[in-house]
Structure formats: structure tokens, C-alpha cells
Image 1 (cartoon, rainbow, N blue to C red):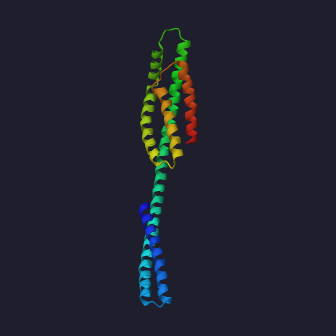
Image 2 (image 1 turned 120 degrees about the horizontal axis):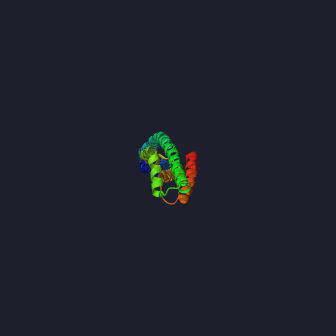
Image 3 (image 1 turned 90 degrees about the vertical axis):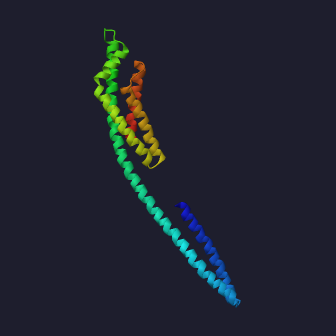
Length: 210
């Protein structure tokens, strides 16, 4: 569309210059009493004037139509973004809360049975038992991750600017990492709890900034 507008704009400007040239020709014929020159200038004025006005009108009309289309697209994109942003935030909050609950529970069980228990349960067994206790919540997290991924893909399409897109990208990335603590816990106790605390803060901060 931009190319069409540019072409008609250039043609209009070019014909306007021709119009000026025929105007000069006409006045030369008029004041110099050159009938043929005057006639040529007059005919040229008519053709160039009509053509210039026509192309100018097409250029302006095309620009108006293009602007209207762009406004409609922008309005539609804004509606789509608002819709998927709402879905994203709802899923985000669900995942964050359940991940916080599950990871916190795993951390507590890990700590209690490692430092306050007389039996010799292995770390793997402790973590697995804690995950079994929270199996339903873990399944909810996994299901909600699939939902938020669909919303995130649409947000990336309809984001109003790069800054907003990057903001959602960061939030989505850190949320997935936080959810991984609940659905796939690993590492040592200290590193796990440190990561849990760090990501818990980041996810909460990201949500407030969305």
C-alpha cells in the first residue's frame, strides 16, 4: 500500500511540474501572439491539470483508506492483546501460587527429614514422597503451563511494542523456571532453597509489572 501511495504521489508531482511548463508555454503564446504555441499550452494545461488532479486525488484517497485500515488493525490488535493478556495473567497467577506452594512444601519436607529425622531416607526418596503428596497440584501446574503457552504465543503476536513483548517474555521465562522447581526438583537442598527464594521474588515482581 505504501508503494502505491508513493507512486501516485510522485506521478502527481511530476504532472504538476508539466502543468507549470504548459502554463509557461500558454503565456508565451498569449503574450507573444503565437497561436499554435498558445493552443499547445492550453491543451497541455488541460491534460496535465486533469491528470495531476486525478493522480493527486487517488494518492490522497488511497492514503485515507490505508490510514483507516491501519486504525482498524491497531484496534483489533489491541482487543486481541487485552484478551490474551488477561488469560496469561490468570494462568500466571495460578502457576505461580501452586509452584510456590509445592516448592515450599518440598523444601520443608526436605529440611525436616534431613535434619530432624532418625531414619535413613535418601534425598531422592524424601523428594519423591513430597511430590507424591502434591501430585494433584503438580498436574495442575503442568496443565496450566500448556494453557499459558498458547496465551504467550498470541501475546507475542499482538504486543503493542517491543518493550511490552520483552516484558512478557521475561515473565514467561522466569515463571517456567519457577514451575520447574515444583515439577522437576533437583540439586542440593541449599541450592534448591536459594533458587526457590530468588525465583519466588522475581515471579512476584514480574506479575506486578505486567
